[in-house]
Image (cartoon, rainbow, N blue to C red; front, side, top):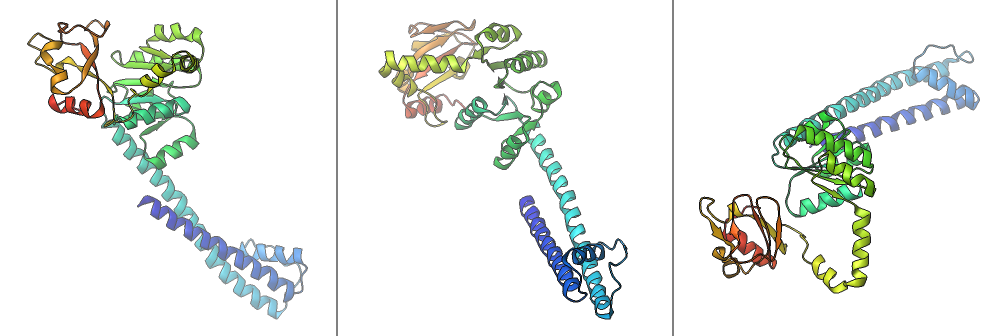
Length: 341
């Protein structure tokens, strides 16, 4: 609805500009052929007449020129007044609409909980957002580039305009209630500052940061990042792996999460699979029989990983299992244990 109103104002502005040009042309032609002025004097007379500034005429006007000037003044007063009104209303209305949109966006962000904050919407930030969107995760973008913000606004993506280094901007993005922060800024120094600020505000926040230089890895970890990603290293390793073990890499690539309803690997908290007051093992879950999924990994409550865990591995609160299966088997697992995505 707001866009429709803005388009209506724009059409009126176009109309007003066209009318002004028509009056200007009529005035120039009238003074050129009725009063006999040269082209420059005709333009001058037309401008001072339309704007009603009150300068003296170039030459004394005859009767025909005076009558023409009277009609030109009356027409220009109406048209110029109309144009000024429309342009003023458009500017005021656009500012109001922007304020309304921003308030609605902020209200939407304030209602979020356990969402993901992405700092920077460049190449890496955009890719992260796409993956999260495919998996149905809610996220907020923090960006300071106005052109990018306009695109986000058109696409209806939740955003906060500002510098992610500022605590107030992070709070506007809901960092107090967020579950994860992804810092994908191009500068390692900016990422370091964001990590420090975010960790200070929310001690329980999971922070994932991008790094361009390997020397920044330890600094970002020390600042509070849970994970630090080096895109260049990952890209190089991946390409080399395609040379050394191409079939294995291709198989692993096909295991990636490509959408909420088309996944091959899932991690599940054990609290979602059984009553935490009971002590059970992976064998007791019988996931293979119930869903067709296979347990390929286990993360205990201390954060230690076990690849291909034994069937008698005990499930304790705070641990997770990683299962492998076809998309329909993953869906059967979620349905069997009423796991919400």
